Image (cartoon, rainbow, N blue to C red; front, side, top):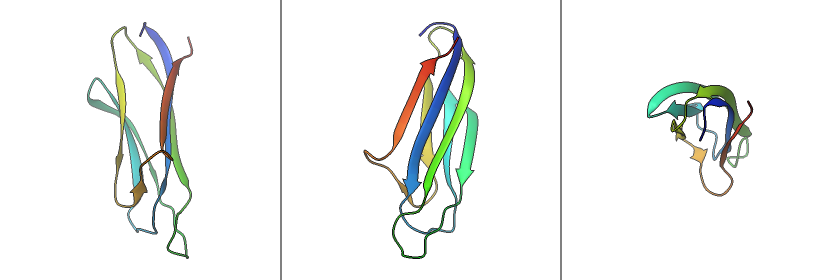
Length: 88
């Protein structure tokens, strides 16, 4: 990576109608940088709506960004995604 501004996004969906919100947290070099919560419900006991967060971070060369999903009921498999790219 090079120094610049980067756009990051992460998405997935709640597996069941848990009362607790699902949350995505971005980390820069292991330190929490941004989080977003989503409280989705469904009345059929199946899947709820998509949860996603996006953010722009100024990064230095060799910085790294990770994302973690927290809270009950977050469905995590191939249906989840995480991406980032240089914007300037």
